[in-house]
Length: 395
Image (cartoon, rainbow, N blue to C red):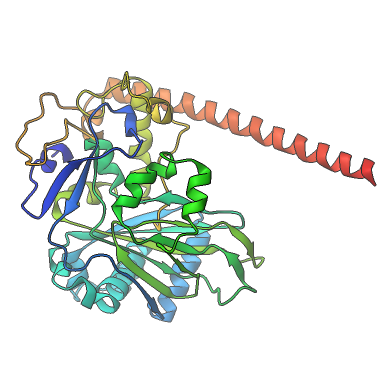
């Protein structure tokens, strides 16, 4: 089923409201909507837990993240998390390492340590998206809110998680191991994101830097085996890593818990998984070719944000601590039927000619991106050489 069909089935616990964050994924011209939860057990909280994972699983998560290098993602249904006959050790023994780590981490952080905060929502959640990111010196995570990215591509509805969190698995114990890489969250919720928008694009850099000094920001230092759980509406970021001990990487697990309306999308392509990245890349290519993802989509003519997503080189994949569009978005009452259906990846695969065209276009765009990256690298090297030459002349 298309996610668009599921998005019409909003119950009385969720409202949809018009929202502009300055972002138009897939060059869509469908109006952006924001899902607002009305019956969450806990809201407006930020909690820190130490010694979250069993030590050998924390070690496994770190080593696997470093060895894999690339982000990975998995989706753990609440049914599996609650069913203790589903053994993480058996899953690990079957070489499904990502699912095993995700299952242990979800149970440890969301169902055990933060279980009291989540209350009855533990049973109401469809599942939890879990992903891993590995970072090095100078890396950071831009300002954002978490939401189901694939679902937004296919509906242009921003669906924040019910609850979000991170688990820090690197053997980092103090400033001698790493400086920077702090996690910061704004406690004013979605209103802050309404003001600053996608990656902060609705305000100036100066305004954003000034806002970071306000008392609405909570800062949590990175610490080995530390978990953080917070309201899924909180905008957040991680600061640049200014120093990290040679041989170490900053590795985190990210968590987003979602309701049933998002289950199909999350299971089809978990955030930051290879399937997710392939699907997003395909949707970007379709946008570049003028093929609609959402109804009334295509090139998104007249959309002042079109340039952001009209090329594959623009990456909307925000690495969340962190990780969606197929028909006209429904009204707040979810009774309006779409007048025109768009497409999702399943529709593309049913059309071999279109699939071949998109693959060819994607390869050309990838080659173009690689050429641009190589040119930028050469330019940076030349500038570094010029700077060294000027330094020598000054000496």
